[in-house]
Image (cartoon, rainbow, N blue to C red; front, top):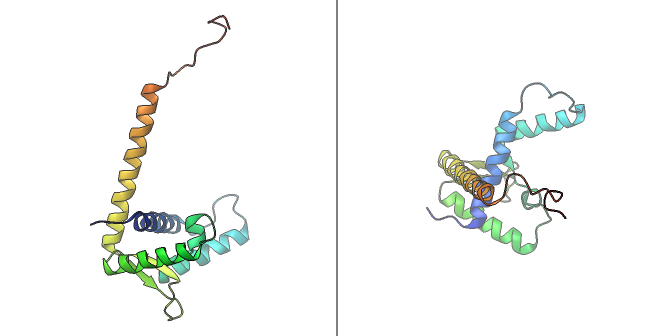
Length: 143
């Protein structure tokens, strides 16, 4: 299965949001403000009913351009055709409001996440080999 970088990004974000909302317990974590807890409960209820909220600005970390919107909309349509996601409109229209991973989409997202974790671990391991553990002490070298 060939996925574009945009498709991979969508899978990663939807998986991360799914994990976050699935991990939310029935009681607020220590120190969480009451209003934030209520917001998290609403997000979790929406997730259970519809999936992860489609929020391209949050996914990208900046407001999307018209081009971003078109590219990601096309990617979502193609991913739905591939059986990786379900696009949901909470109110029954044509605009996607939520995205849900299918079983095969979850498997693919988990595989990509594991691949990425292994790549990062290999990179960090390679860096650790190349970098000295203890930087030289300038006093020992007479500087």
